[in-house]
Amino acid sequence: MAWDGGMLTQGSSSRIKGGVLISRLNMLRHHGGQGRVDEVLRRLPAEDQALLRKMLLPVGWYPLELNLRLDAAIAGVVSPEDEDRAFLEMGRASADEALHGAQHVFVKAGEPHFLLSQAPQIYRFYYAVGSRTYEPTGPRSGVLRTFGAENVTVPDCLTIIGWHERAIELCGGQSVRISHPMCRARGAPHCEYHCAWE
Image (cartoon, rainbow, N blue to C red; front, side, top):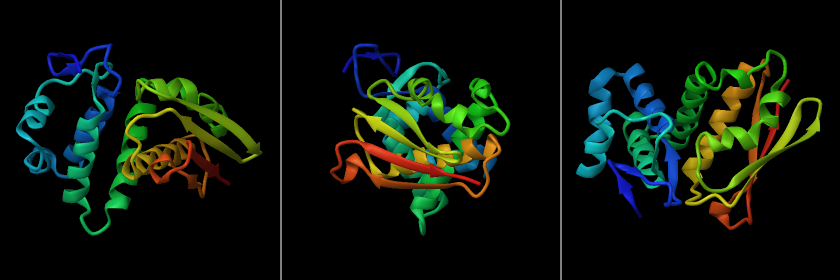
């Protein structure tokens, strides 16, 4: 892999946008200040700590593996008894930050389908490799599918569920339910997320 000041250069494939890392660190600050950030960072290798203590660029590309290690460290600190819940909350916090910020154009009151239909574009805000599609299946339901993603893990899929759960809520959907019947991390050819809301 080629490196450039801590970021992966365009030629490398396993990348994620800095905005994801920033949202994770902001979530920690919101729930415990800099002390909570430091507690999590101490669980990471020295090179990860050094990179995460620098100014991160929201649109810069960083190693996806760094994000996976950071997420695991966060879950181990904030919710060791229920790490799945922690990953869902990380996804929700990321959606809150993005959709109240640079991605606010995807939120239309009463129109979750509009946001979900933008899945291919939203995917590019986060990942360098792979793609995501959306297929409406009813007035208040639809299926997201992710193809060709790298380093698919159950925790990352949980953050995706949390992100879309919160995104649908921000568009006015209530009693949101998202199931994940097909997962590449469990041997399926692609990931599917079945979304429904009231």
